[in-house]
Length: 439
Image 1 (tube, rainbow, N blue to C red):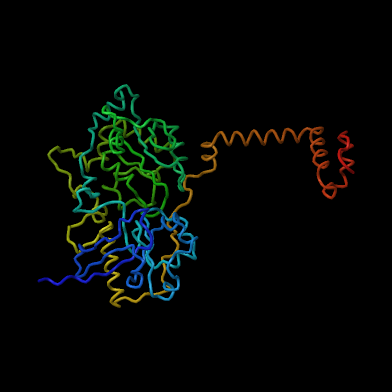
Image 2 (spheres, rainbow, N blue to C red; image 1 turned 180 degrees about the vertical axis):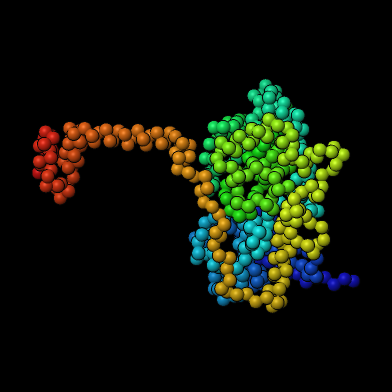
């Protein structure tokens, strides 16, 4: 009878995005001679050398404000290690030196983290990033071209580009770039920001899924809300999976996310939104050039089945997995296995904690990349116009000597005596404005 593997507890101090998805999670498919089990039960605090916190939950539930964290002294003395978990871009906590220094390990989508969990799955998962990239387009090009020219079911023709966006506010200021891009090329925008097209409904009355919308378009804006190293989300996968050419804005380097080395259109490669629009229009009007962008999904030889040999080596190296349990990649299983191994090594004394080690402040983000002053002023033109008109009115009023004198007289009339300058009487007399108020 096989001996039951030893099991090590791993403590989550917070929920994970308001869910208990990690509670009682058994980690037993890592090719390790032991298992681990994650728990939300704080009574395991003394048994777990690691304590995991979700960054969003720390802020949302105000753990820091309410002082409901475990003893900080245990971290500083090397008794415990805190792990910061987040699949979002670095936020307020990463810029707070006092709290960042308490976290020993980082579990994020940054590939230099201690534990890397991207937004994408690895094989053997059926929905792995590789499988979705290599899958046939959801809609043939000839049908997309017809929708571009004629639309469907009484709807106006589609734009060459689609953008599905859930939030206008972003650190990057992406909406300001899109606003400029709209001057030179049509974009159909769905969702909750700059919306110019209603969410489509199918003949059975059911709303289309995001993927079904993107599949109709030749190009798709995969603009991240932050410009941080390796911060690439499901927006890119949506474009790849549906067969739309991704137009991207995110990290400075997309090498590990670019299927062929030129499958993406990166806004950073263009001097302005105008030059980007010209390039997209060129591809839109030339099927051969357009299909070259999608050669990994639509090969020239119809008998050829797309495979990893059609993809760039850096891309395959990042997202391919042999299926061997002892191999861990940048996905949720890989992270869980890595954390389990670290927990075992700490519990068994194979690794000693260093209270001075911490994750440091994340300096990989570009803040306000597209928040150019003129772009912002043009986007908020109604505010800009109001300010200009207000300033103009004030300058006009102050330029009229009688009005200026009247305003000064009225102000000094209600102001304390000590505020009045000695020249007040002479100024009032010079402007022929009678003195008002007490002397």
